[in-house]
Image 1: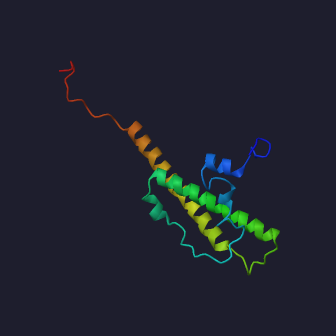
Image 2: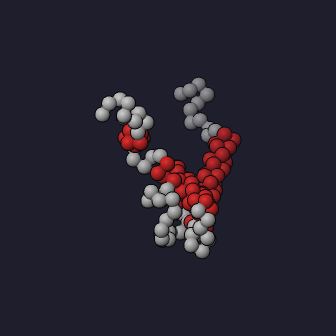
Image 3: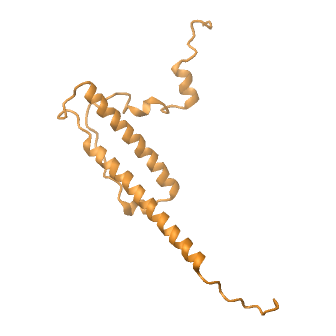
Length: 138
């Protein structure tokens, strides 16, 4: 294959560089614009479950939910484009679960921030303990 027939911007080249599933593929479920059948989904995350997670876990979950929200928005736009009736395709419950989970993550993070600010205020305003040393340091 010579230089002129080879595509410089080949999709395979970008997949190798970016890693599999790191591009526009994440906006489509199973490489299809609309799912053929309705997939079972779980419940939205509860705030009590999220309070037990570390900051890193919450950050990872936020990214997963953000990708899910983008995927659902893509599916909604594809359904409008292809004029699919809501009886045949409706992912409203998944959108609601995703938005609730994201709002609950924000709530948990704001609770943690408020607790941090309160602890910082108490630590700054707390009187220092009296020293056990004498006035001359001995």
